[in-house]
Amino acid sequence: MTATLSSTRARAALRTTARASAELLLIFVMLAVALWILGRMWSVVWPLVVGLLLTTLTWPPTRFLRRRGWKPALAASVVTVLFLLVALGVVALIAVPVASQSGDLTDGVVDGIQKLREWAAGPPLNIGDAQINKAFDSAVSRAQDGLGSMVGAVVTGVSTVVNGLVTAVLALFLMFFFLKDGPRFLPWLADQLPGRLATDVPTVAARSWDALGSFVRSQAAVGLLDAVLIGLGLWILDVPLVLPLAVLTFVSAFVPIIGALFAGFVAVLIALVSNGLTDALIVLAIIVVVQQLEGNVFQPMIQSRGLGIHAAVVLLAVTLGGNLAGIVGSLLAVPVAALIAVVWNYVREQLRDPSHPGSDDANTAPAPS
Image (cartoon, rainbow, N blue to C red; front, side, top):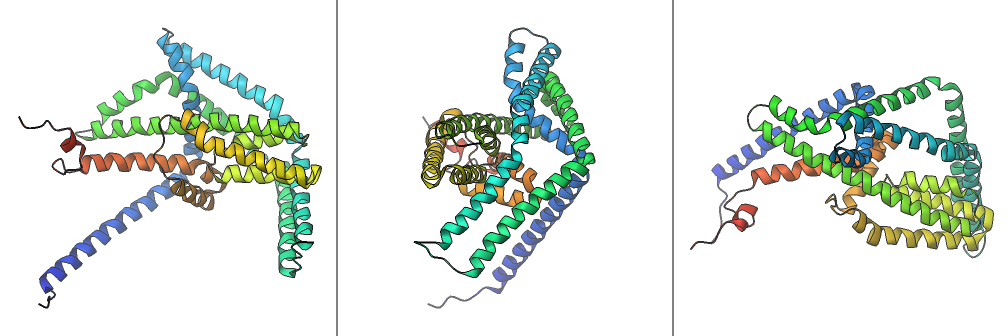
């Protein structure tokens, strides 16, 4: 029996496809407009984002004090002052030595790349291709040019420093107000929204806050453990620049996957230049072991509630964020992906058919008597 194509069904399918395509195109246009508006307001949005990230770190001690009967303003003030003192202490004890040795760190990376080039050109590889040598020379040249550009930006970029200070001050004040009045925000938001939005938006906001806090706190804890363990290994092997490398490891932990690879690559290069191939291989082994412990032990223990994002999605998000907005995009890629996942999961819950066998309502419905 030969099946015939129904022209009526084909036209209906084409109309449905066209309508869905138009709706999808409209969504993309709205997203593009929203991103354009976000870019125009970035001078305000960036301090807000930094303030929220800092609040996720400082909210647990504030909540502890408030549960002990402290007034919200007093608890927020004490935690803000303590956070400021800790930040200044970190700058005084760590950032200053790191800045003073940053030139040595960059020179070590450049020397390491040069040493790798020489090793690849010799036995047993005997790679004598001129294009490969040219690529290594280009990498060294770019690193040196990048260092010169950074030095020039530090010398001449007074406005950048001022903007950074303004952002830090605004973020600190916003953190204080978030700590003080944060629990009152969701009830206030629910009162301002009409109809079902009064339920949906606060619910999504609460889940987004939980996801953001889980990510920031877990990455900070895991980054600290990585920095301590890798720094201890570098110190035992007497590798120079231990403190800058440990700080780099901690900071890089906030950029999942790519950050760990970058910090490990720099540490291995420094060990190769200063201590030789054997110690460089030992450093590589230490980094691999620590990364395995992080992925299989530290992360599951510290982050009790995962973000529910596959590692491949994390890698793609970090790559896309870096291409779109550089370092800032890489830092914000995973939190943004987590927030998108929260919204998507909530929408799926609301659109799920209660009569479907796989739905939660169907699974939890009482059995007929």
